[in-house]
Image (cartoon, rainbow, N blue to C red; front, side, top):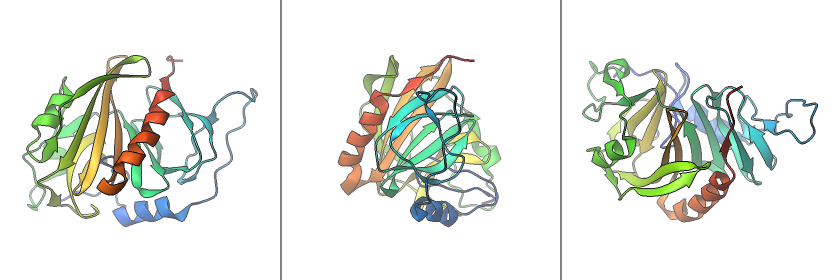
Length: 241
């Protein structure tokens, strides 16, 4: 399989052509010192999300390049795992096994592809994002999903669906066996790792499908889901500038 990308094990993100998953995991575990917040004339203005991996002080943060723009409130224990890009950002809580991602997918990955054949390419496997992404997840032949539930996120209707990966495959750079799911772009792909529990919040913001992904090992998922719920409670998408 000819995939050259950083598979970040977040039921979430793969970012950066030519990088390996171990590099991403090492960055998540290094606990780099917090990057100084971008200066602001308004002391009450949200802090900008740092442009590199590292721990974050508690506070209110705003995206700088992700579209649509958002603000979120983080308590202690969070860090940047995958620095912000126009269509994705990845955060970790406590360690690199409990991950939260916000993704604006441009494509989905064909479920029939296993990427075990050298002739398979990621580019050939990308499909348009379906209008009903929750149903696509439920019907995915490599996942075992629960019944989708309705909720609200940032004041708009959203769908929540939990799932586990049941028919994973080995992919270069993937930590263990996984399934490639959503592509922010051809070099940035969300993956689902075998053995982890995943929760997706799927919503529409100004006509764009936004996916908030939470992933953790099974034994840690319940507590992590509560942390994610606190973040989502105060998440808001800001008007276009």
